Image (cartoon, rainbow over all chains, first blue to last red; front, side):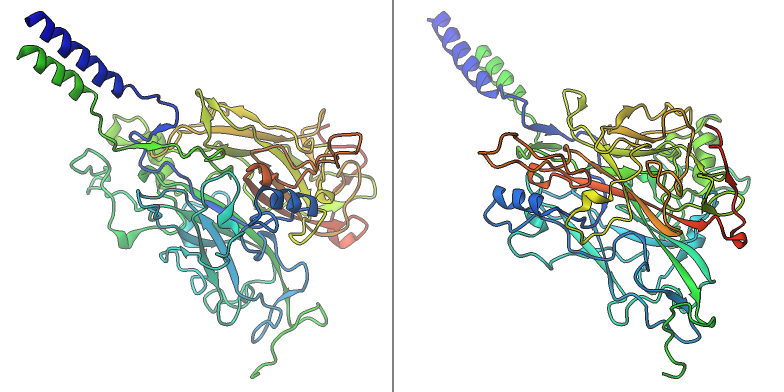
Length: 275
Length: 267
């Protein structure tokens, strides 16, 4: 009698345990990784009509290939019209500029988990000791304002319907929404020098790096987890990515020339003074 | 009673917390490709990467860069003057061959799931319907060719993968002509010189082969030629770009103070 009960329990146990055996394909263990998804800067690129047709063949909802909205491309700026340093302003200034970023990290409800910050660095030397001193155009992009969720272009068939990949969590900043972007005359109201300039965009999915705290002897102070103690938030260095905090980052650049609006006929369109 | 307890213990052992476990939704291309380069670094990060007093004098790897040093994107300036379009054919200020790095997080069986392909484009137009016509510098990078997976530490520098992210494979694209260690941007786009002025060299990386239009069913061949520079979004491709801008001065202009040479320097 006892043997029969033991056998019955054993069989039941095996059946229950067998139900616990699950295939591991399709299961992703994130483990200790706190920032599995990396931030990206995205922009539309040109597609051929044949490629658009191929996308439309994948889904009836697509009229062409799903791309982020067209905006000012990175790289060379001002190939169409001269940008100039002007006594007043530059009528050739850019219109508003959208910058698009995405980060795939979402919570269980599908909501983005990481804020994305961006900073513009002007003419950053390769060997700069402190990139935060090159932060520029804060009147257009504050390094402490996270990108906002992009809701425009949300119609069916847009970038959100990208093929065979997770829905992109697109976010954006709009620079110069009201008056456009006068690169040569309005770096927080300062004018640039005549010549070529490089404007680097750095975006990251963690707050900017905060320096370590040192004692009177210059030794790094540690916190209760034996990690370097960090300066408070208001000492953060915009433009410096906090790699030790697990930040990911992305970089893109605009390059432009500022001509001299005071020189005769360089193609400038300076705003009449007092105008 | 005892067998029942044993049974309960066995079954309880099957209970596993679902924290940190996600069900793969079966999407084909989960990880998007990225072009990577070093972030602007602060001197303190460099210092602590190499020496940290709290780490017994060793460096603290959490402060180290994640990517080997490479040519920063943006404006490329020549050393000692300007780049020039040279009547003699070679610019003495041609830049050293350089690497471009990219990452793709998709892995399978401990190996990269996706192959990354690259192409150089010159002065691309985002509104063009023939973007493949911007393919350039095929002598320095074979259009549509695959990069190679490299070890982050190959360059002999202190480089650490991020502690906050899973291990991601690093891909390298070496911009270099066979038999030469320089890149003559203004004079050697497959042997053709550029026009004087500003130019944009864009390198595009994608995680699927570049798009190839199919022919009609009644046509003999199966496909038209591949369109390098057109990512195959219909096949689930992602893409990323990096831009380099440079100015070519006119080598016949004495005011440009060019360094034009008869022979390729360093060839």
